[in-house]
Length: 554
Image 1 (cartoon, rainbow, N blue to C red):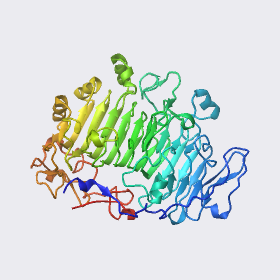
Image 2 (image 1 turned 120 degrees about the horizontal axis):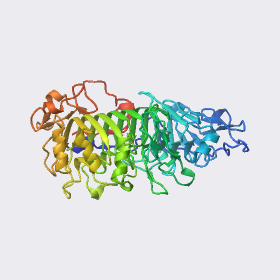
Image 3 (image 1 turned 180 degrees about the vertical axis):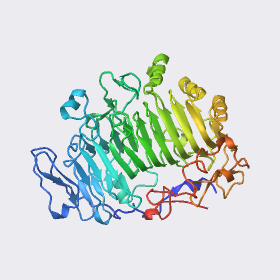
Image 4 (image 1 turned 60 degrees about the vertical axis):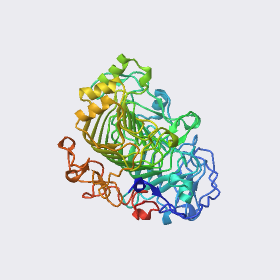
């Protein structure tokens, strides 16, 4: 078997499960806005299945149904025409989709404390709330269209295993998006009032007396013109809502100010935001990126993310528990790119040390992660060559019970250190590794280019990490059915970790130094436990939700 086991194909004519086949018939939309002085010109019982809201003038503003899908014009909601009241997006009968002709921005953005005070916005829940019902599909038309949940607002997108929520593009709903197409729509930005080290504080984070110095309004990604939004504050316990069983497909774009939109950007999102069972599928930029904050993640899938599957910056202090990241065979960057200090290069050593001393740097815990990273080089990379974990800029992190594999296909051999497994970088992060603040607990690597340099090799070995010997430029399978020397994964879809007691690294059971800290296996999944990816994820399991995509097997 070769890397084709982690490649996904789509048969001709396949369409998104749960949505209508063929092109969507987008009907003329109502001429309405959410202001006081515009008269609604649509409506009627045929449209009652569509989302609606009552504006400040007492009018009911509603989408238009074509019998299957609901369409929402830019007069309903768009950049510059933000949603300013609570709204629920229902599940449509017969698998219909909600088609937005512009962006969906929830709540207003506020650039000063005075603006926040005048609006009565101090925390999540003070602003309008967007609720998305289980099983609903929202689709956007272009890469300029995206979702923003502004500070003070909340999103409650709570799907179920059998009725996940899908955020995607019209091209995907129409069946014209290819399996690895990106930039089909913008993605999601969620902003909160938690801590970001791009702002100034007095005292130590988490201790009495900790407070902002001045104001904190950091421009979020995509922040240009009508797309502008801000994040940041001092409340690490802020809540931006709840995401459960949500699939974000084909997102990402480079916007006017040079920012690259991710699957979901979490700007200073607080720990009372719940994120369970989230998938980012085929994204142009990162899967998830945390800019400060303290939001936690359980059960995360990143499939075909072209940049970093997990990106950490600006003092994020949270956890990721159970994560599966699989890059394309030809395009992907880091499984983890993690930075401790925002604007690191503009600070001197004294200022950086102060950020760390006052608990303002990123301090993360990632447990039970399986990474299968791309072996690509610069020639086929959208961003940079495929690689494992890049840990830098004053980062403190614990990575526990995890597998990092880049051995399904021959790696690029032009450079000797571009497809590395591990790179701990810069003095502050090297110090953290030396001082016990950056730790690898029960980790196995299987990469052709394992370590970026001698320090990383010595550090990993001192941490007890085990590295398989994988020949440079050679196809090697890490699956039990194919290679007696390297057996880390198993299953018809090879995403399940082999029980550690029978795994093989260089033809032997790996040693006690990397034995699981809990359970019987390293990585995200095991055939011996409940498969948390089953039924709701897209592109992994044949037949799951009648999906059109599956792993090829030989």
